[in-house]
Image (cartoon, rainbow, N blue to C red; front, side, top):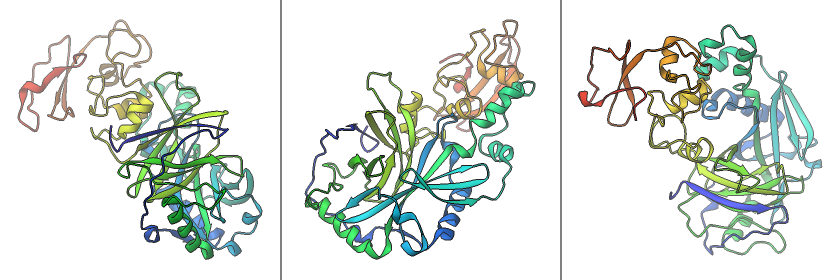
Length: 392
């Protein structure tokens, strides 16, 4: 799948190969944000919290990283930061990586595993925030406070770690020069730098290696400014699905980032996050690697519910039409207000639904025992698109 997916295998011993392309890029044109002190940094994080598209991220208990790119900073405004080890050196220019998590009403920021800053966060209505992103919780949770609380917990915004890489403002020109030299195949002796991939039209890992802070640092090459989803595995034989590790808001051509490696061997995969072929709200790479759904079908199971609704709102398997195996399809149970995860053998009913040419649901009619008697045309005026739920 060209221009979408890129994989690299990394071991902590750093026995890996990356092809070097002796080319150069206009790195002096790289857009970069400047922050002068902790107050400016905190303000940028609060803006990111207010605007980031969290609904794209899977609802699960594991945390993941949202990398917001590369910023320049004034060391005088960040006391304590330069006393921590840098993430890496590019030439002899240090680059620090800050990780910020939201917890108990605070932003807590660390560098190299050391907490160096904290800032109280304006309170927010967590329940309202979650409903705004994901819709109302499943109605069958109303009488089960434990499952309702878990539904909110798995969608809370605190599960997202925010990451920023910082270069001293006064050394930005040196940093750019070091990247240009690295891209031309002339990195500083003993200091690995990012390199252009052989195919500069696709996303690629341009550098990867352990940092002084004990994390796995890497540079991501992108042909333009775009979001890139990162996935990981510890064993390629461990099933077909990949773990979602986070999203990098990449700026061309190179964007530094980092992961905390959970094991001695880590396999990474990168996928563009700006491609959504079926318009269901889930990027193609996420569908292929993480969920196993069809990136060209809004509704992979053919039951009339979008993959996004089944995964993000209801927590159902998007590839199953009848989660509890009671013969009553999930879509019909949802319309009836019953729990599709609990067998209800006595239930029956029929729903007819309409798709347009792109397999998008455009209308439905609820009947009984297959006796839906009315029909409506799709926007394309095609009555032959009428199908019953449960059919391919």
